[in-house]
Length: 197
Image (tube, rainbow, N blue to C red; front, side, top):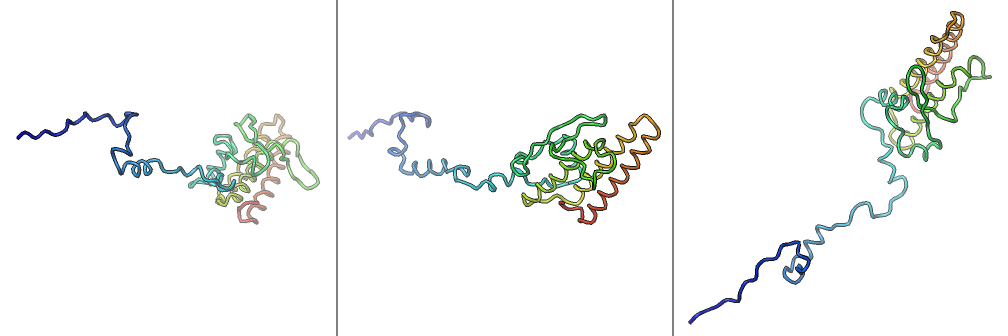
């Protein structure tokens, strides 16, 4: 007596379109479902949830981070314009690039002193303070070193302007005003604990 098994067909490659996983493999449907799980982006999310990670303050040296933002070494956060209401722009100064708040200005009582001359420094400083407000609104406020860095760059930019003047008397005049403005800003920051204004 001779026993013959039915002939075995050659195995088709797994990528063959004619293979019917459900017919030949009963558990294939369950395996396929596990492979093709729903992605996490298809569920509707609130605007805050979608942008929360965009604006999270990076860990590390917040003073250095602020300086990078103000000098343009780091671009503004992706949703900065939506949260704060303007898009910062860059200018080139004799002492490097600075990012500016187009709506900013030197907010000096009664506009005394060289307000116009220190306007570029003030617009960069305003952008720095808006970054502090931005990160606070996002729930990840920057540390005190960030505000100190914004104030320090404001001081530096005003003294750079003063020191660039040709005449001795002009240098003395602008240095005096730079000292007054910078000291006032730093005292105000200290009074606010160097947190967001």
